[in-house]
Amino acid sequence: MFFKKSSTETKNTFLVKTCALLIHAAKIDQNYTENEEEIIKKTLLELGAKKETITQTIKNAKSIEENSNQILDFTKEVKNLSEADKIKIIEALWSIIYSNNEADIYETNLMRRLVGLLYVDSSTMGNIKDRIKKEKL
Image 1: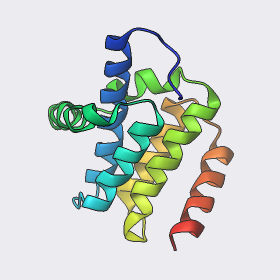
Image 2: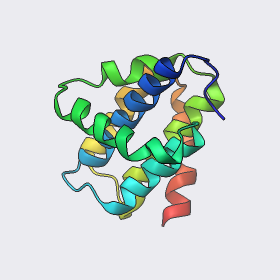
Image 3: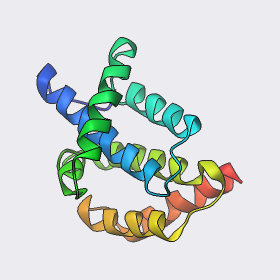
Image 4: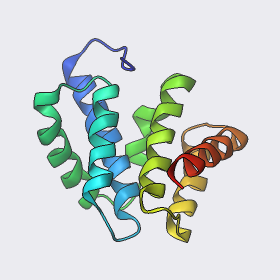
């Protein structure tokens, strides 16, 4: 389990905001697919979500993502995680992006912005991208 805080409400907020970030990445190319949603569900489970709450978490996250015009709110919780936890989320983001076997300019721009917002080294981000790309192609 990646989440270490004890409050259920805090955990739910974290999961919804993280899910909103993943949904944003999935929708940025205007093609949100079932495959991308499956990656999101798998990631949520790995982050400690309960299987019975995933549908509601995704519903809440979609609403937040649709009503937000910036990703800063989605990244607040993630940037304070351990490096290992951030890497897991970044792996999910790249998996979503490469789920259709290519990354467009909007997707790569999003990931470039996330390097700074999540306090991740650009070489780490590049290594994750290269590994996920090789796995998907």
